[in-house]
Length: 457
Image 1 (tube, rainbow, N blue to C red):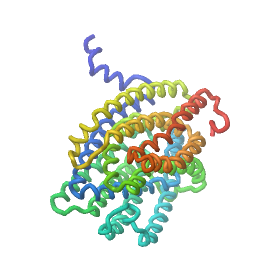
Image 2: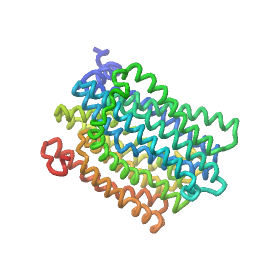
Image 3: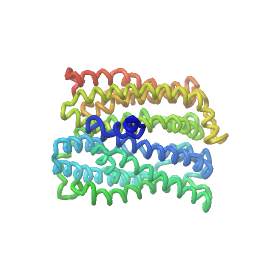
Image 4: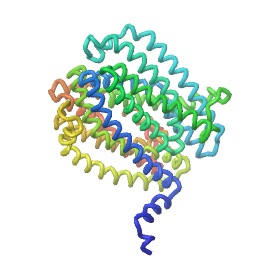
C-alpha cells in the first residue's frame, strides 16, 4: 500500500492515466522541460561569452542584425504553419498519402521562395548601408557586408531544413523538435569558446558560428528522420502536387500576414532602440528580455504540444477535452504571473550575478518587461487554440491593427516621453491589450458552437 502512494508511483500514474492525447502531451512536456532547461542554461552562458569576445557595442549590432534576419523566417507566406495544421488533420484522419503530398508540396514551395529571396539579397546587398541600418561604427562596414550574405544564406538554408521540426511538432512530438535548437546552442557554445582562445574578437566569426551550428544539426536530423521515423512522409518530386498549394497557402497566407504583424510587434524593438538610443541599449534590452524570456520558453514547453492536439480534438469535436485543457492552462498562467512578480524583485541581483558590471539594466525596464511577458503568455493561451482550429480571420485583423499602432506607440513612449527602452516595451504592451480581450471571447464562441461571422472564419 505504501508503494502505491510512493512519489514514483504517483509520477508513473500521472504519465499513464487520462486521455491518450493528454498522456502524449504530458510526456512531451516533461522531456521538453529537460531539453529547454539545457537550452536556457546554454543560451545564458553564450551571452557573457559573446560579450567578452566582441564587446557590448558589437554584440548590440549583432543582436539587431540577427533580429532582422529572423524577419526572413516569416517569408514562407505561412506555409510552415499551414503545413502544421494540414499535416495534423491528415494524420488525425489516417490519410498518410495526403500527409506526404502536403510535406512534398511545402518543401517545393519553400525552396522556390528561399531561392528567390537569396537572389534578391545578392542583388541588393551591395547597395545597402548596413552601418546606417544598424547604427554601427563605420569601421564595421566591410565586415557587415560579408556577414549579411553568410548569415542570410545559412539562415535561408536552415529555413528549408527547419520544416522537419514543424512535421515532428504536428505529429505531437515537440520534445524531439525542440532538441534541435538545444543541440545547435551547445555546438555554438563550444565553437565560440574555442574562438575566444585562438582568435581576436570578430563579429564575422561569431555570426557564422551561431548560424552554421543549428544548420548542421538540422541537416543531420533530416537525414536520420526521413530515413527512419518519417520515411513514409519523405519529400519527393513525385509527390509534389501544386493543386494542394492553394489549400496550404490559403490558410498559410493568413498565418503569413499574422506573422508579419507579430514580427512588427515583437521583433521591431531592437531596431527602434538602436535608432533612438544606440546599440548599447539593445544589449541592455536583450539582457532583460532573455531573463524574463525564461518564462516564455518554459510556457512554450507547456503549450507547444497543444496546437496540434487542439487541431485533432477540434476535428473530432472533443470539446470536453478542450475545455478541461484550457482551464488547466489558465490556472497555470496565474502561477506564471506570480512568478514573474518575484522575478522583477530579484532582477537586479540576477543581472549582477550573470553579466556583472558589463551591462546596466534599469528596474523600470525589468518591471515593464515582466508585464509584457504576463500579457503575451495570456494571449498565447487563446492563440494556440484558435490557430489549431484554423479560425484565424479575427486574429489576422487584430494583428494588423497591433502592427500599425505598435511602432508609433513605442517611439512615443520611448523617445517623446523619455522612457527609453522601457517605453518601447510599454508601447508593445499597450498594443497587446485588444488581443488579450477579444481572443478569450472567440474561444468561448467556438467551444459553444455559437461562432458566426468573423468569429468563425
